[in-house]
Image (cartoon, rainbow, N blue to C red; front, side, top):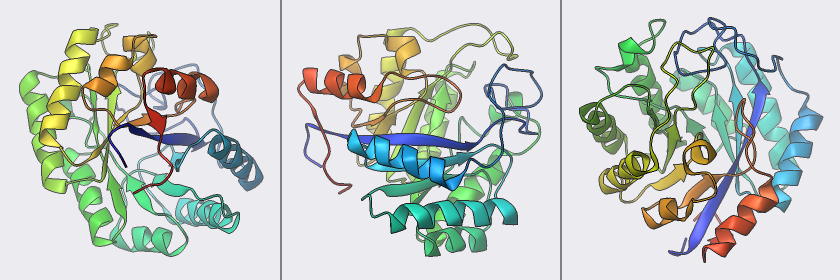
Amino acid sequence: MSNNEIFLCSICNVSSGDCPEDCKYCTQSAHYGTQIQRYKYKKIDKILQEARTLREYGALGFCLVTAGRGLDSDKCEYIAEAASAIKKADLGLHIIACCGSSDLDSLKYLKKHGVDSYNHNLETSKEYFPKICSTHTWIERFETCENTLKAELGLCSGGIFGIGESWNDRIELLKHLQILSPHSSPINFYIANEALPLPMQTLSQDEALECVILAREYLPNARLMIAGGREAVFGDNQKPLFEAGINAVVLGDYLTTDGKAPRDDVAMIESYGYIPAQSCH
């Protein structure tokens, strides 16, 4: 990728809601009664339709996301089937799976069936994580990232800012991401939701930009992807994000919140003097 190219990635929420985990920042958790769509295992034809549409808008990455703690055998088979169908359609998409904790054998199975990368975010520092989740550990997340690398899948791992963590927590998160050296690192900003147990606060643009600058400092070679909270924090003033080191964007909708129309995102990026990347390399 050249310096003015922006990698476009899209999210397909293929199994939504009713997650048994109690992550305080997540609307998919069954603990908090958020008003979101809930369904299990979107039809493969529907997934293919979404993949084709987003590819037409310039997306190169396509992430299959499931709610829940981890990748059990049924979920693994379903994601393998979906990935195989997308590969068979020859859309030229880099397929990412994001399905929670996973053992090494399951990740190898996904790779065999067309998955190119696995996304599992560390979210925050090891020390702060117990304050936002009690149903699984930070170590479990880190080990899944290590398993991803052992399976020879691309690793996509990042975090979420604005959940009450300190600057030291942010630095510790980035230090551990630096150890993992993911090829892509999503940067999320917390979106306040009355149903969630975190304060109804949104980071200021200045503080959010400092997070991006810090992430770029620690991860100079990663594809730094701005994801959830981009619109909530920056509105229509998103050019500073790219100037601070962002070189990838989640195109269109997020897991449970609406994004801009894909064509509008592309037009915005081009208005800043950037162009959508034409390849993953």
